[in-house]
Length: 270
Image (cartoon, rainbow, N blue to C red):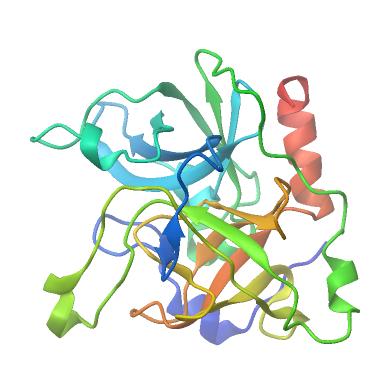
């Protein structure tokens, strides 16, 4: 299925590099605690073990971790993952690299293009050793989110966004105020746009304000669960400004090319 967005958005969104990432995390939210233990913080490493960036993702099974494509793209060659609600207290004084609760090999959607990462922004990590949990996140049914587009009004359609990273972002002149504790948090943003000229048929725009919370720079790939379920409607993908205000962009996982890739490449692990 073709996924289109306005050129202005594609131009504004940069590919992942160490100094500028489209990655996002939770703002104006609350501590997640043990509500989503299958959501973890990941750090991508290059072939020499040097840390590249940090993201969030969701365990779909004991050996498969779902995240964003710009979190797994080259030069990422290995991923370390933590599942503690408070990872901050576990980070050594000298920072990364260190060993997570699990490690694995990253894979990226075959149609992913760093120059337009939001069009196929899906990635996965195959863990080297299984992580056993009582429950895991679930993939959505095919095109399930299209039903939302026909509902009367979007103000009551909510998602549960979970992630690690910056809890707040400020303009460059006040960037020293940035809050980036590595703790798992959640917010309940409302649906703003779906199947529009801005989102195309592959993304969602969700609210990001003090009332609902939302996502912000610091961590991408985290799940946006449908309502209060454990079904991943989409992964946190992009933002439209540098202060994390107004909206958050989510890459949908319910399209045929995404579900088809996951099932064909990793079906034995789902």
